[in-house]
Length: 242
Image 1 (cartoon, rainbow, N blue to C red):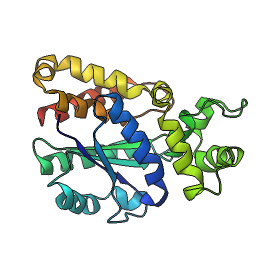
Image 2: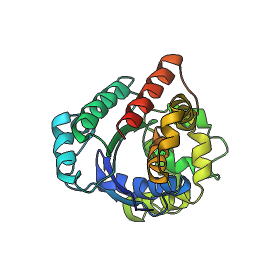
Image 3: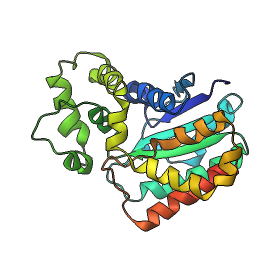
């Protein structure tokens, strides 16, 4: 099977790269893309969420790398912003229209920061920490991740231990999946609604679609019917672009 080329686009790669690369690799490996080539976009340095949500910033990235990238994955923090999902969906629609068939762009927000993905992969968090409170916290990096990195003795490692702890978390990806499981339910809905088309996909295309499961809700819940419907429609759009 031909290797899938994935470009992960963070809002700021300087620390986020240490989280995203190992966890996205683990995600793809679990769905049959162990040979996927995962890279993090370092040129340009987007530099923050405000810029990452601008089409005029994303469009040149797609134009520059589309010749070899199969899947673009924009990953940003949610920061308790209810309007973030809508902004990301708008980027997806513009990007998919630009990329046409055979290439994909997905944009997702981590609840509430990427560092929560690291915490999800570790089973030795302080006993008084509650998962729903971690996910609801506006600043989980300061409140939970940095204290955990100190407890783990990793603060003097690159990026305050993100690389070390993310690699450890990636080795227990099933634990992350369990805690951030919304996407699995939504993708099943989308694939079931388009079973005839999905049956026609080859293994590589199915792996790509399932690799999109980083659409995450760290609280592990589908919040409401409107969001479920939106996500199903989103799966439909992605599949129709194959």
